Image (cartoon, rainbow, N blue to C red; front, side):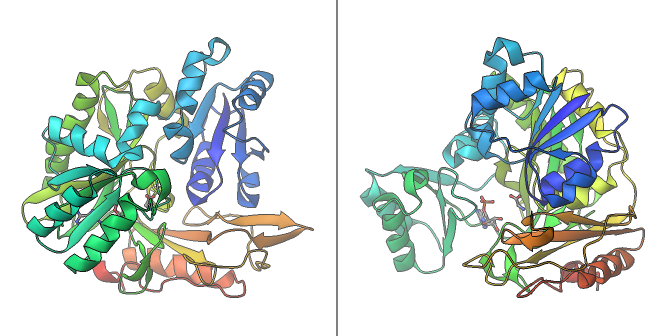
Length: 428
Ligand code: AMP
Ligand code: GLY
């Protein structure tokens, strides 16, 4: 099978690593990829939004399967393009069409979906940009903290939480009237604040059945102790010790199955991953958000635990032959730590030389590159999240030790990583 994978981050590095192990694979192309994935496939200079170019590439290279890592191509209709273009419609496409991708692309869409299908989530109200006064009046009737969410994609920055009512009122005005997040905040969801421990569950679905992947927890804030600004994710761990079998069952019954059934009831064809961002509250597990893709860095912790051929399971999803089940996973703990550029998630420099990266030789300690680039034969930084290391071991503490030991051997000027990944779960 010839496979084209879109994306360039740590998530796509983990996909490439896993796909390269598949019995079904002939050629893997990654667009655009990064210098780390050349161990697993060929990087190609192909932009997903140049549809004609993508079409020519797929036909010239006899591509059999397309896998999309990030949400943008999905929210913007790449899957629809493949399905509507006769010459491409035979290609297996992993990722939902535009309407399914709205689960992530519009907070209001996903809240209405959850309300319709009785999926537990925070109570909410949505306001358009011509309803600033109504939004302010509504804020005055609800309790602090105030959770304000830009409706559309805002690069992970669209959720703002304020303790103080006046700050929340200023914020809602900025979001709605001043379009703080551009078009994305022309509608804003105001939501009840939920308290509890967050974790994520992932499925690969064909719209009827689903494969359940291992759960994960990520570390979103930049500073240790979960303080400071939100980032794309500074580390991840799988399994999550506080997710017991009964919590898993609750999530399956109250959240996953109603979601898959809801898609089918709403006649939303969906082939691809669903990422359930969840929170364990006193009232049970509730949904914080859906994403129409895998998480980053959760994928870097989850995929190394999966003991099945990833292209085989993806093929079952694309051919709509899934009989729901949990994927076979190993019992190891996977602990992933990110190394980021100094200054991230705010301003940071690029082009800094990275020393100490070697080819991956062991499956129990893996480097996944993300924001990296080759220039004049040197590996340099090219993004905020530069690379991560996943350590695996039956003993969680050893998984952690392996990850940090290897991470320490890779160095660049201004680097930063959190040293407390796993601490909150007693892995220290
Ligand atoms: P989202 O983009 O919806 O995942 O939100 C980003 C982060 O904001 C989440 O991971 C939570 O930490 C926080 N958050 C979002 N919604 C809520 C809520 N209703 N209550 C508490 N925290 C929330
Ligand atoms: N790590 C969170 C995400 O991928 O959205």
